[in-house]
Image (cartoon, rainbow, N blue to C red; front, side, top):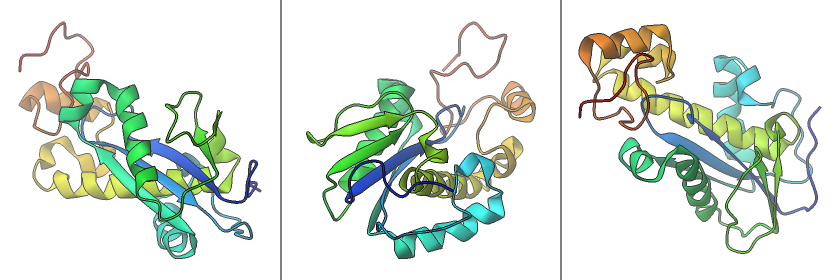
Length: 198
């Protein structure tokens, strides 16, 4: 079972989704949970089924002391690179919190400091702490919903299934149809491509 807290009572967990995608935004969430919050299902979003993630989302939103979700879209990702875009998305999610956390716990090994609030980077933190797991679920479900929405505009890429990740099917669609306004132009869209004509 995941731990409630790393260090402090008023602690925000943050995580992102969509870093490795060829299309769509990178989405981040920040979540402060009550210290007595318990849930046996909540875990790293990657190990949960889509149904479990979608069932957890309203539960997290209802029970969280505070939460925020933010997205950075491809045009900005292309300008500042995906690592910086991930940090920007996390900062914007933290901006939405109605309470200022005493401490921030971040999934991964790198983070840009936020408003002089102390933080800790925790590798695989989404499988260790409830607030990071909650952030991972919110980031993933919000992003998936967005990809399903833009799938209606460009169904040939099948984003409803691959969510913009570099699957063989997605790459083949790029090879056949080219890229859209939702694709990240600085990403290597096709494995054998030397440059991208934009």
